[in-house]
Length: 291
DNA sequence: CGTTACACCTGAGGGC
DNA sequence: TGCCCTCAGGTGTAAC
Image 1 (cartoon, helix red, strand yellow):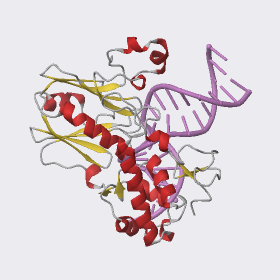
Image 2 (cartoon, rainbow, N blue to C red):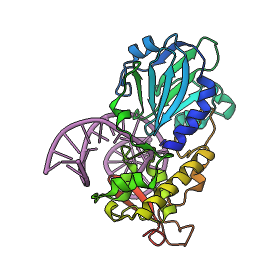
Image 3 (cartoon, chains in turn orange, green, brown):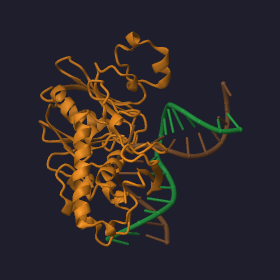
Image 4 (cartoon, rainbow, N blue to C red):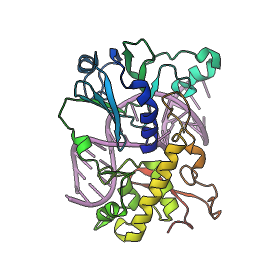
């Protein structure tokens, strides 16, 4: 679910609720591949520490600790990072959603999907990482150490230039959209914003990468940045799970031109939006506007 | 090396 | 109601 805009909105809204607070306790679920660092080790390295900075690279959040360690967080498909005072139906299972009235929703109750909960010495709101599908990740990086997941990331999507994309397209027969999703080329673009960016650039996602011109590479990168920036402005895309740290929904799902609009008319020309599978992911495009 | 298939999970929604 | 299928903002790995 979360792509660069959702991660960046999470970073901006979580930072003021996290920085400078001393961690008093850490609660987790049982060990699973969600934890790249074991719950036991997380607890021992986090307790007593303070987060001094919250950064982002691509879709990763990087929480720097006063110990010099770095906590890496990835939201995967269904990850949710929020404060304990957040109120949203998205933070509940469907049954809880329908059986409770809004006023009964008061007070988030940690459930089996609540994998990480940080408590603080100031007694204020806990910070919670919930993830139904567990494709999210948490990794504690000891001071001075790096990680292959970070090392292989390409230029951040907001900093990318047309030339960065162009370089990756040479001698590549793979669809241009598949390259956009490759985090080692440009970091941060996911399925929604790739489709939306390509629509804005008027390039069909299926186009062979080596047949995309330099001018089109410029246009694709600029268009992707435009939709990513707009995604941030509107608070991200809340389609099924994504929720902002304070519990609010994003608004970008209402501005989609092609993503998940199969069978609906193109908002530009009226042609029917098409859905095709590329590299095991759905791609959506307008066959008339995108060539 | 580039490309593709699949695996990792859970839940929602549709057809029968 | 149940069952079985497909689909979902991601990414690491194995196999050609």
